[in-house]
Image (cartoon, rainbow, N blue to C red; front, side, top):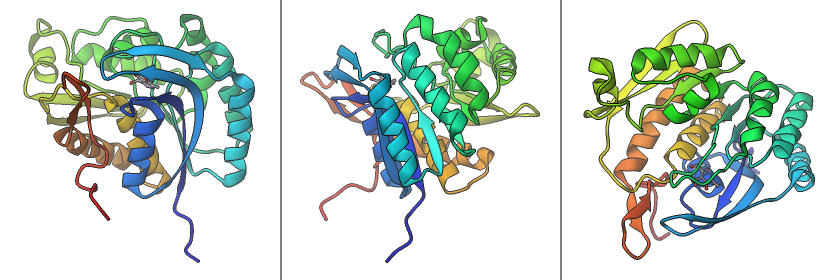
Length: 281
Ligand code: PXL
């Protein structure tokens, strides 16, 4: 019998359209060759264009999924949509009792179309109970603003926000894909609307900037989910954090190059974590 591959858990919501959340995480895990465990926090109904319904599964069912996942064994964890404060509490309580395991949080607050995916009143629990237990949090610019309580107009402010968030516990990867406001001077211009994206990693000691070409595609649903899942998968393979992030950024670039349209109009679509790996067997 073969030895099992690393076991990596996603704690996330289901996206019926298969673009974001747990479906994106599991595709990413498959591409990395790890065994993906899947604890669902909520079910969402999504067309290519919008989130039409969101139903949290509730703390009891989440807790039972976590306990059974633990019995199977877990080398690394990715956390995405948590829906509400009760779910945040269950995950935080469970992590406290788990033997130390590297965990990455994509602090999902809203969908791209604006649907609330984490209740506002759950944010303090996220900061106080969950962040101190994590190895890495991967906010985009809007999430970094919400967590740090400051406005970010350029790379210097992104650094300040990362410093503030790091004091809450984890290393921080501020992703630059949404772009800094164009008027924010040369830093903002470089990181945002131009031909490059800068993702900033701060581990409490030093900053590392991951600069990569901006892939011009409208079909980018699931990008944040895929990035954080890819970091967790790399950690599952026992890569050091910097190396796991470096490879995850390259992985997302390739997935964006392989992005494809979905839905009737084709105006929406997703990146492809399985880019280059699909086909008839
Ligand atoms: O991209 C954030 C996200 C995460 N998880 C689920 C989602 C979304 C965005 O729509 O639906 C389940």
